[in-house]
Length: 68
Image (tube, rainbow, N blue to C red; front, side, top):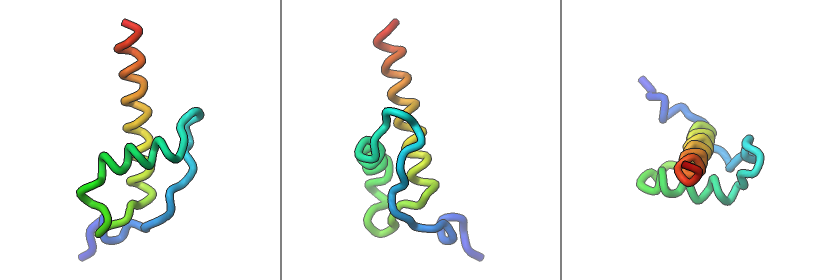
């Protein structure tokens, strides 16, 4: 039986959905999150989306922390 990670489609990095977030920002964040996975297992669409969401959450938390 195949696991979810075995059936996930490997793909090129998509453009970010979040305004103000660049591909470079997401790529650097994804590398930090998934460096143990690379290069044996290229990133999937799910990996890119999760990296962008985590980056945005981190950026928002830092802004809130600075403003307080």
